Image 1 (tube, rainbow, N blue to C red):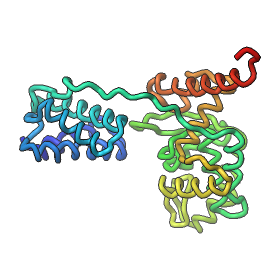
Image 2: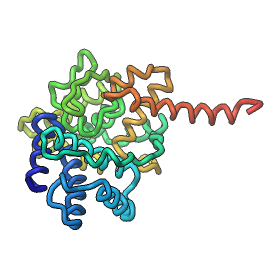
Image 3: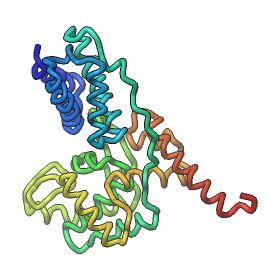
Length: 297
């Protein structure tokens, strides 16, 4: 069985049996395509012919091309997943990735906005236009819930419960979770539903909550572009992204006494270790406060 058939079998496994998202599937396909290109240059015809030395050479080439340690680790993880499948299917006898150590990397602390910066950012969209009402509602919802931007743009009308004050989100692998919304977010959503959404649709119908005048849901790219524009208008010099609002949501909750497990549930993290990085952020900030104000610091 040649590379292409093995590749297609693995990708079908990820799509059908593991039900991975399109973004994750694209990431796997991109990583494996890099390996296949390298392996073919070495004269390999299928995955079973790739050796640990080939993988070492492959990773060295990527490193020489400027691929970050984090990206190398992600790529190696994808290869290990692929080889586990190929071995389980009897396509490969051995897994060469088992002889390759995972690149060591320091965990980068997430950047976040201050409360004042968030307030300035969220006040930028005009509430005098349908698009401004929509953008204000989207920003308020993102900061109030800590949703991923992909979850935000996929929200549908029936995912919002205005009476209970919560949103039903679908995360990785379509895992469902309920996240509460604050009064300001609920007020912004109400204002948008009453004075913006129908004007944008002009009598058309769609199940998406946040829409365009073409009766479509918003895209991640379009939202990101608007977010950067509003950040510039607010005078925020930090490199802004939707994920930075997610970081800000988690950090501000923990700073005010929220417990880690609750924040984990709201963020939709499968592993508490992923959420624990925000405790390091708090420790860093506390250290700065201590050093500044304690008389014997």
